Image (cartoon, rainbow, N blue to C red):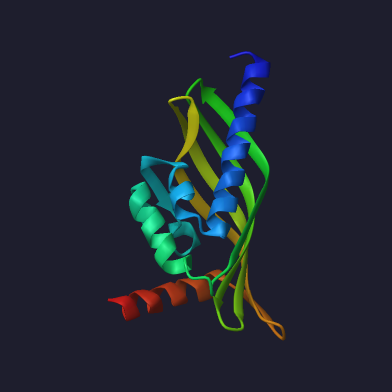
Length: 165
């Protein structure tokens, strides 16, 4: 692939990721679902989450956890490192900063990276896999901010699994 064509493909992937953030934060679940392959895999296990296989399952999970208007989110991605590996495949790493309202007076500010793969289907790029890693998480409200350490995150994950099962 010549350098100009590669840059066009990289720009298309940047637009895909921009729509990912906008549709997620706007809670436009139908448009957001269209950004993924049917066999999409989300892996947030290194950030204390779970592995979810299937785009429909992933969208349903996020809709159930973040879909309420009382849980606004802000996802900002930047500094993309995108490599087009063939005319129909690519991979990328994005720096991430997000804010999620967990409940009244309690918010999470997260910092990390998305590690993703992409495939081009019928002329359109889609996200095939996404792994989230976290560098830092802070719980905050108008009065207090607390950094969440890895140990605290692991303990919270264990507690959440016990309460769920």
